[in-house]
Image (cartoon, rainbow, N blue to C red; front, side):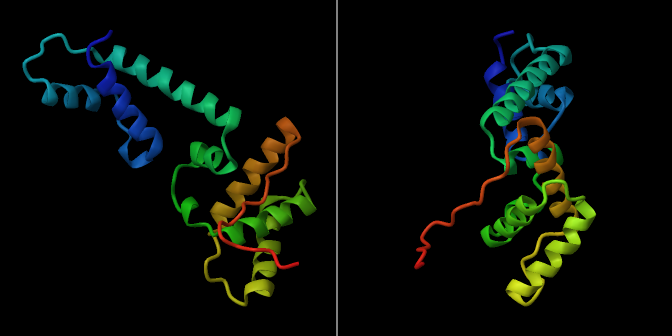
Length: 162
């Protein structure tokens, strides 16, 4: 199938970047029909599904090979709220995880809330409990697989005066 492949790939890649733009083969086929009403050789749903499957598998391999933890969490759980996590908050989470890699997500959440409150004085800018637990779960499974700990994120424009 060569006809429409570029358009299908464009739509699928948009869905991989933003979950709200994901669509199935039927929706993609209707978009192709609206873009090219004069064509009668439209790919069938099965052909479109095979392109979707191939692109999703390729994307997952790329993310697992060289993706950041953020990308892996997005891949597993979607884009919701993850991009709003501040560097300070994420670094605090990483530091706590480094202290005990076997920590249970529920226990981690309680420790994180306490430590965040001690350092920042309030719970403003703190991730939701679900997001924090998802990060910990992702880090734990990554650590079990690769024995690799998450790295602190570096904020641009800051200078360490130590």
